Image (cartoon, rainbow, N blue to C red):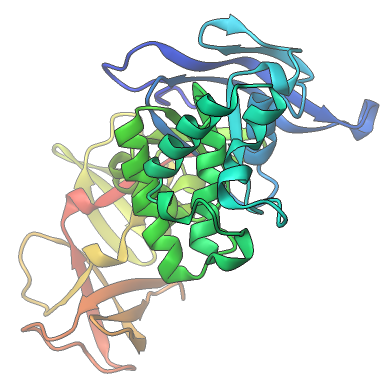
Length: 373
């Protein structure tokens, strides 16, 4: 785990979930593969926490271990301060919402939502009250007598949420719950679920591979790769201050340019990258000759003429330009044939050079993130 990972939010209250040196192995001997490898993590009560990463990174396995559907190979898992390692799923005060709604087609909405309470033998009067409260929380009380087949995908997802919430879990787990929805409905549900979480104050733990979805909904995000957490941070810090190449390349669009430290000029760090000599804010951990990676968001770059002032500039040949409505995405081919991509606002004062012409892309020194791992 990198030394600057934040494992708990500043100023937060008690811990809802603690993962202590958790590992999950599949296979034996030389064929052993770790889906999750030595994870140490604290998720605070009332937090909207997201596991984000590509397929196979270990995020769903982690969620299943919290739920009790999978047992860790080693390590301990605490729920509300109590060790639940080895405790079966039905004895943990957590509920899970899956991508498939799994509603019973022969039961109406009210019966679906109250099914778990019926199995537990809860009195009918209490079930009616709790079903109504759960449906009110997802704005679906009007559909209590309808069958699932009469509902849209978004409405069915709300019913699945109500069914999970009716048991009053201390933690609600959501495993890519919007994957079956179209883009517009998915975005509507993201905002609704985030607002619901704030209103109810329940700890939500969310799994997704969608970076925009994670940034939209989360208080904190754990970026995972190959079973290991790469970085834990809030959405702004994760987007603007990635700590390594994987996180920088996975979250949003990012230019990654390989460079090498050429020395210092006073309090400035001199870096040579793709045929350009750049002066950047000093990074004390870097010495002359050290390799590094320059990470620059496309929206931070803009075209300038040769008389531009005190900015970091990259010279090259303008490549393709793609119109995407509000912006045009342009590329600049550098001396080593690598490319910088800039997101230029349409209708601005400065014209974009034509493909094949020489061009200069510039950005503020503070817009460049120097990465060493």
